[in-house]
Length: 309
Image (cartoon, rainbow, N blue to C red; front, side, top):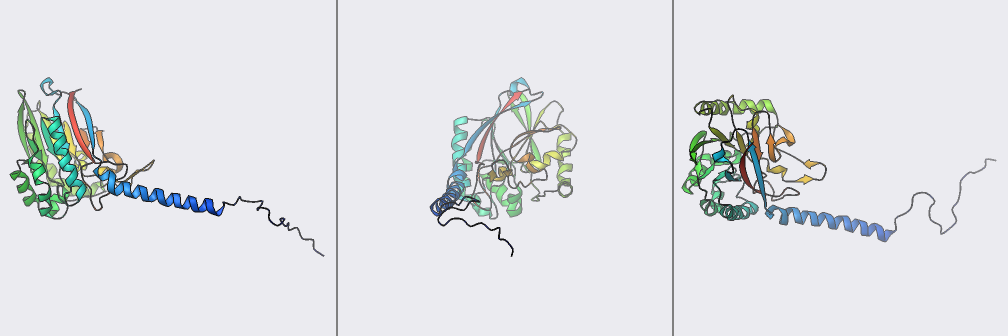
């Protein structure tokens, strides 16, 4: 007769294998997880999109004339005025710019998202921007897809000089500085070859702009999409200012941004990027797109100071 090897636990004793989590503790843990998730959602939708960070950056530029050392720029981008965070943060940006009293205010696009009339929500704030040597802007991919002529005209009526594939010389402390503006194509790609093909005419136009500038004069480029800095034509560009990527809007610990609309991945998520050909500053921008949500990626007002280096 076979002998059974099964063991029987005495009644009332806990299982000798995996320890059991008491029901109350399990419920408490589940409620805690749900509570943390709800708090994170509340923060991401109701708090962080309005929690503007003023980022101050010193940008060393090789060959910067001593007369331009300390030149102060307020750089703003991506208000996306169809959603409330962009409207509120743009108003805050005007206050900050007034306090900073900059030499230049430079705007790098995406004022609207899909309706040109949304620009009306920010025109009062935009018309209040002031700088010693002027307020300048370029259009972003959403502006171009929506109605570039409409957006450019409204900005111009607000006292902002819109650079549409053109350059303007500025005389600052007896030194000439060139502001160059390349208007977005409206096309976004996460692959380099389609990007090059779509932007080829812009590359050719920009090459002609560079050819007309004396070699010893400083060149600052405004362009919405930072990817353009990787396909620049021959010729020196000292600094590129861009936006577009929003820092990803949602960033997770250890993982970083979940999605960046760039052919170069995380490279242009935000901040100062020093490449082989030029230096690029990418702001996280003022507003949001698709949903008014940000997480570990606050909206940004950037104050740049150029330094000889």
